[in-house]
Image (tube, rainbow, N blue to C red; front, side):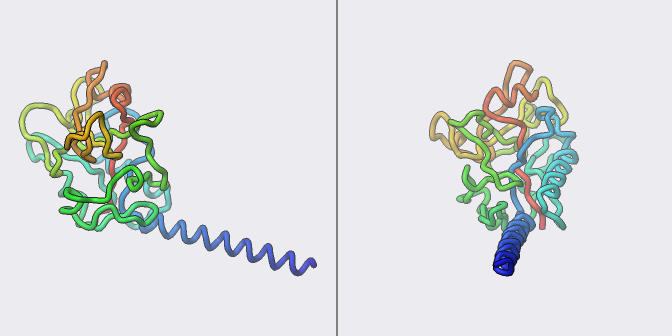
Length: 220
């Protein structure tokens, strides 16, 4: 009886270890996620460098190693950077090994990015429109084709250095809005931020259904 019980415990332990190993393998194969939390300073991310560091830190904490992570963000002004040019070639898959896009063209065309697939680095669903709280506004600073905005209008909160007056373009990860217009169902270019503090604070981002979250991609 004791031997049987011992064998059963060994078997359970082995199964648990196998499940853990499989989960760890999925996490390490992850090449795309939405940050489970923002840095907490609204759209002041410490520039692209700070945003990339945030992606890298969360990915490593979740068990993803050996990758260079980049935030999906465009910048404005001299030497403007396009978000689509800084994330590698693809394909990209979430923490559950579901592919969201096979390459840059598909990512900015007919992709598989939605509330059920745009998961956090932990594999969790990010709450969206109709949930409390709504966190579907993801910072991108980008046009729908993944390129930077030209002109004088701020669409990056001063290239992610401001938490007061300004604006940053956001996308809806759940592909939902008050109507079905192209911007409202866009994952990367829905509307500029706004709010009582001027548009770039954490409170401003929360006021329109956001939380300062980012899309993170592993470059090739």
